[in-house]
Image 1 (cartoon, rainbow, N blue to C red):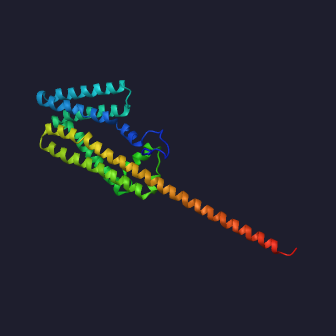
Image 2 (image 1 turned 90 degrees about the vertical axis):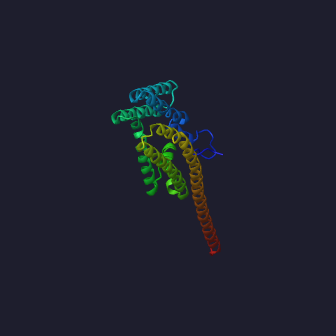
Image 3 (image 1 turned 135 degrees about the vertical axis):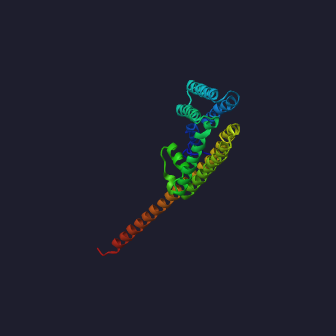
Length: 248
């Protein structure tokens, strides 16, 4: 059995689902993104906002250095560091520890809107991400079953983003900074893992649909060609018979 995104009969190329996860920083990246929050909340409760900001930035710096030393994917490491920095800046400007979570809250709403809109216009984001990883392959756009599979995966991500926004925005309004930290972690990589599994299954279904669709097209084309050849052969045979019956 071939992996999602690999060509039929080929086992040498890496799975496309794994490639997508790698672009997100991998499983370790999802765990690393939780560490600054794990440090920020208790330090904020015990020592106040500024020590918490310093602790979160220190952890983010250590994570960035560690990932660069290990030669991990650079983009997720740097973007994660800047995300912590922006979150810390917002908390400082707001003057409250709960401000640290504002960036994540509103980004969840933003992505929920983007993913929902992509399904409405029949351009599911998950399909385009897969196409980009799969050497810009957009053959799936002409296969209804593939589009439907990517619609389902995209809507699962909409549920993830929407639930994060609703729950964390409620906790923010209620000034529950401690529970905000719990919600950020609990609704972070666990929900991402579930959505990633659905995405993996959607990729498998889309790959199968695309192969079956193009396989049917090829069989149809072969049949047409065979019919044309037989017709030409019959015509030639008929002409040869007519020539033989003509008087010399």
